[in-house]
Length: 181
Image 1 (cartoon, rainbow, N blue to C red):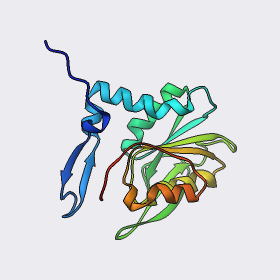
Image 2: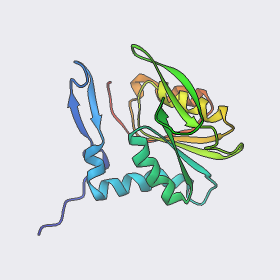
Image 3: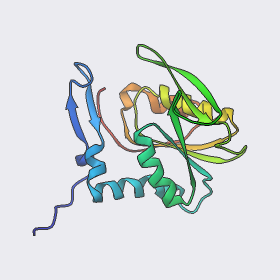
């Protein structure tokens, strides 16, 4: 069997035009996740700046942030905390509403998921408008977390979400950028 050629991590992302609506190019990380080498390289790259430091918890935003965040937490020997859509967690929660393009949504976290002063790394697959990520930062801070940084595989810099996080004094790390929406 011929060995697989080495490809750039960005090449492992599938781009789907006109999804979920015309003019949008959806950046699909499921192809990265299904490629063992690409998945490993992405997790290693997300972990690298924080290895050897103190990260008490990794918080992942539903749903792809669970996959990436769980792997990052494992590599950092940290706990993992899910940030979920409203109504999905079984214990007492704290929630936050945030703006979407057309309307609002809510996310929540267990009230006891974070101890005051815990150093938390926020992880998700993509940063676009920053609405969900900024809401997650505010939710984490509300229950006493020190948000050390936010990490994403993909940034869509033209949309400005990463800058919104930086404006909240949260360092942002991304592995790649794509133009457009």
